[in-house]
Amino acid sequence: MLQTSPAVRNDARPDENKARALTAYRWMILARVLEEKLASLYRGGKITGGVFLGKGQEALSAAIGTALKKGDIFAPLIRDMAGRLAFGESVLEAARTYLGSRLGPMRGRDGNIHRGKPRDGYYAMISHLGAMVSTVAGGLFARRARGETGVVGATCIGDGATSTGSFHEGLNMAAVEKLPLVVIVANNQYAYSTPTARQYACEDLVQRAAGYGVAGYKIDGTDPSACVEVVHEAVARARAGAGPQMVVADLLRLVGHGEHDDFHYMNHALKLAPIGRDCLDVAREQLIASGDATRAQLDTMRNQAAAEVESACGTALREALPNPSEEDWCALSTRRLSEGGQQ
Image 1 (cartoon, helix red, strand yellow):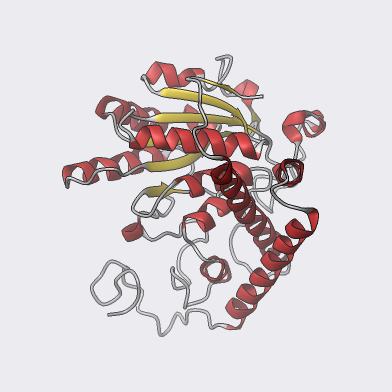
Image 2 (spheres, rainbow, N blue to C red):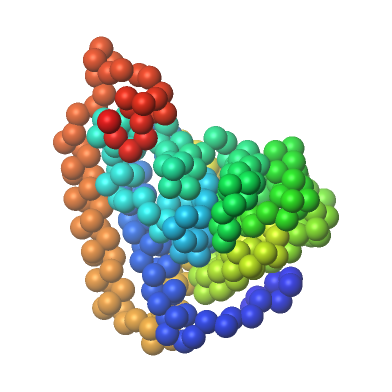
């Protein structure tokens, strides 16, 4: 089931594995329900800009968010709603950002994918084309210079980003400096509309890890148990001083690049193949088969997620948008409009 290099061992206790699986599922289902609501609001003309969904990638994203700790660095990308929520972003903060509320963390500014809280190690995305690899590496280097230890930095990129200069420069620097960086590659078979066969000639993306001298892991990204086990192990190894880790997860983006994209270029044979499984369906069956949860309990979790999402979106929809004639559009880093609220 798992093909990883180096071999991964699971030292977690059974009760710890159960807790991890249930926690990951909660963030997965919350992210799915929230994004379904956001897609509906986008189609209804309530959201300006793009909406990019993580459908099919929630297991991998949740594994990242749950593996990190407070004080770590996380640079999520456009399909990392589950990881964002697991790392500490609230549903209300996300809803406010998408709906442009002036009470949100971005105060109605910038696009909805560029949100973050840098002081909390939650980096705002610059670009999904490999730029965050060097950004997180730089953050880790700065932490080291300040004498901080035990910190891990992680970011998730797509298969297309591994072909960029930013990916090469960032990972190469991290490898030379032996930084505790974890790079998660969501190999979702398309760089926008370009299939993997037109992106790289190596047999598998995980082979690139060896070229940089970093540990490489290959997993089935549709298998939530595998995602949680391997990503937690990679983070643990980075924290223990083993240097950069690269995890390549094979999966399929189950929707278009964004809600504006009808995904007409997709090879439909992929959807019928094992790689086209919905990780939420797989997680549900795994939890039931292991006895860690019943169908009724999982249904309750989804209903609770739906209630939380409806409440948050309802609140954000009632809040005022920024008034261009009244807002002071100076940077959030200024003293008067510092991150975290006015002072």
